[in-house]
Image (cartoon, rainbow, N blue to C red):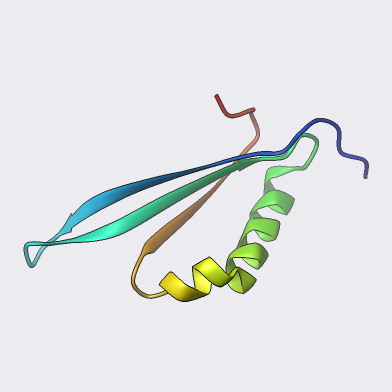
Length: 74
């Protein structure tokens, strides 16, 4: 499979209130890769999240939501 165009990624970091009146970080990662089906992109994102040094450093302390996109990010 040949991919055309540039991949795009964004990360939105927010504070999220939890029931015990504390706040925790939450990160939503959006990725778009032209020509790559959503199922394959999700698998690639999950694999990357498993081996990423940043992900390993925050695992269990920061909620990370992986959002593959079939449309270019604006």
